[in-house]
Amino acid sequence: MKNIDGKISIIVPAYNEAGRIVPNIEETIRTFDKFGCDWELILMDDGSSDDTFTLADKLSLKHPQRLIIKRNPTHAGKGRALKKAFRYVSGKYVVFLDADMDLHPAQVQTLFDIMRLDNADIVIGSKLHPNSVVNYPLQRRIVSFGYYLLVKLLFNLPCHDTQTGLKLFKVEVLQKVFPRILVKQFAFDLEVLVNANYLGYKIAEAPIVLNAQRAFGRIGVVSVFTTFWDTLTVFYRMYILKYYDRIDYYRRKKLAKESRRLRR
Ligand SMILES: Nc1nc2c(ncn2[C@@H]2O[C@H](COP(=O)(O)OP(=O)(O)OP(=O)(O)O)[C@@H](O)[C@H]2O)c(=O)[nH]1
Ligand SMILES: [Mg+2]
Image (tube, rainbow, N blue to C red; front, side):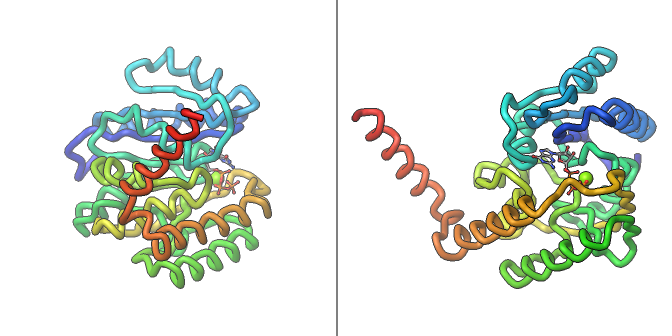
């Protein structure tokens, strides 16, 4: 692999992916082994009700030095899974990669090339990049474009698509940003990027090739509504509450409330 000078930690959030998790991890292992760099893969099972964890855990016996398989006992959302997985990271670079293989991991090379070329701290795959090749349903394209407009209006981020499941970060970015993050579900990516941008980290976008593996996406009306609501709460915290500026003050306040409750 070109343009990489340190270990890569790949974080894979997985929720009810038993049908595809083993071949998908095996394909990811083959891909990174071919790259010839140092890497590890941390799979965080998000309280699946199927065999995702057991199957992945069994596979890790074959690759003990590469795979770290963890699980949340309860289901809480992709964001919390990514944040929890970060505790196990030992690399210099962190890749977020969805478990469903909509985005082939070989594309990570493009993200590294762009990181080097643009001197960026974060490179995100973007479905709205002019050179992207995306094969996914029309209604998802509409939702994706609508969300782009909303995010542009609310945050004016220097990127078009915050939601794609392939991203590359320098580890120090996430060390700084993760303690500020409250969203547990799909607006998590947005909260991470809003905070990273606010802290002055440079975000670049990469073209991707996306092949939707599920005939019908799993993201229903409830997820779209929750993401919309969580996006508004990030806006409220950023511009009205100034939570991200006064994070220590809010933490102390929360602790004081907690200790008053315990004393009662
Ligand atoms: N849907 C969903 N996925 C989760 C959750 N927690 C972790 N994940 C994982 O997060 C990644 C993205 O979820 P997907 O359901 O594929 O979401 P998507 O790619 O936006 O939508 P699809 O069109 O269904 O692929 C996958 O690797 C999931 O296994 C969760 O609470 N809900
Ligand atoms: Mg997906």
